[in-house]
Image 1 (cartoon, rainbow over the protein chains, first blue to last red):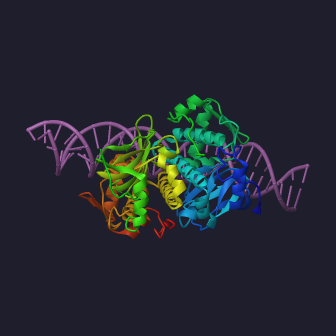
Image 2 (cartoon, each protein chain N blue to C red):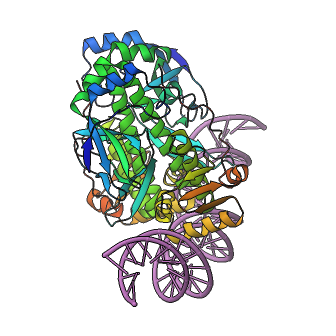
Image 3 (spheres, rainbow over the protein chains, first blue to last red):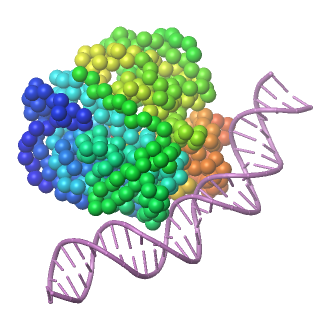
Length: 244
Length: 244
DNA sequence: CGCCTGGTTGACTATGTTCAACCCTCGTGG
DNA sequence: CCACGAGGGTTGAACATAGTCAACCAGGCG
């Protein structure tokens, strides 16, 4: 892990290209550095108290929670533009860990300046809750899957979700053909299924010619039928709207 | 549903007694009324676009999501001090519905003034993300249960959670003996289990003399053993710290 | 009185887990 | 250059956990 500096947008999601010079100048004052983490290493630890939080510039990660006996639940996926570690600044410690799945670049902010940010830049503060509200919406999706979808629906819904997130975050150009650095174990832990059964559901979706996953790339072959398989009606629509 | 006015704390959780006159005067400017809803009726509808959001003054509710074929997932429980409907102000529509479980009193805020609030009162804005971060932490808990705990652990963890939330929100005096307006169906939909199996797990916990639920009251008879049954190690500790 | 809601229980079934192989690829060291 | 081992993926068979179906009970309300 090395620390250097660069342009660090606080709300990168859908704002990467639209940041004004003024915005950038603003962020310069608040960022304290740029953080690089390698694939497979933890970015933050569950239960940790950190003086920093981050914005993801590039790469992907998992938010994970552990049970005492080692059972792991992937609570959400992290894509460029997401916040990491804000909880440790607002609450006293992180309620989940974050593990890098690819090499990542993160922008570092210091906890002390959070309050300063609130006073001096309401627009930025607004972006922050927007991000928080979006994260909450995602967790709700995941919870609906884990609680009420059967195995096949879960993995179908999960793949659709990952495609959508990848596209929205510019991690991928399109949701139908995206880089896919995740292991089946990660999908299983996200869906709340065993590895073996997750594999079988993937086979089933592959046999039905709905998806293809190979060489680190996921392809959604038939989006409408995949949505049916996932019991989803929701249109992505224009979800976000960071004010200003 | 009727609308009247009263003292409307924006961050009521753990702040009910600590609001200054200044705080109250401030809130007066932003609230637009007080809302009363009866037990069993919806407060906000999933997918709705509302010009208002709320703070809960009294009563309890469920956040619910529905699948196309009617399967229901309870995504979280709402207690006094919680925010309701903020999503509809930040995103374009609500990602979940909210159903009152008891009669409720809510404080009404208008969406338009949200931005004004951010500019004029950073402290309040800070409270808002604090609340959002707390909600996210709760959803993570629920997701961990749904994904990785077995049936008995889930209902044990759920009851512990409800006790803790009830105490923290002053819905109850103590987490060990709290009013319990929820149906077994609500617990089942929160745990991601069938009604029948939820009932059997409750019987099991009752037979083990860990809990008692009767006459609208839940009693935790042996908290430490209940925590073991839930695979929980986490101490409640001092979680929150709304700045200022 | 009779229905409706919510809770309780048993028997049967099904979905998903566990266990145990086996396969392939890739990186490393003899 | 090949052998080896580790990580990830694939598959079948046995098993267990949780779901479904169906019935019954108790209290409350019209």
